[in-house]
Length: 108
Image (cartoon, rainbow, N blue to C red; front, side, top):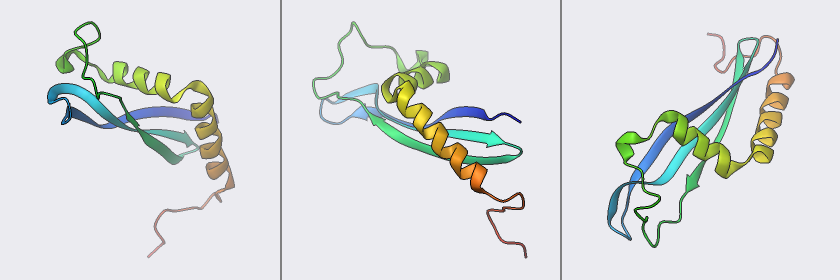
């Protein structure tokens, strides 16, 4: 069976205290989960955006107009294909090293 991959946006911080602008993305918390044969492992991170100077009207998008797909695209762009592939390889290594009867919690 092949691996399936899912990038999830866990949290966004929509306010920058320095510029006092609101409804902009200051930080995105995200994870990538790999699943194979009903086993899964997750890795992730946070992306901080440099908003010290605020955001210009040319690049500003209303926060209500942003979709999960757009945020995921930002993550993929900022993290980069090389690092995402490294993370996938790390997840695959973890899953491939687990025994068939591996459980997160012990049997009771």
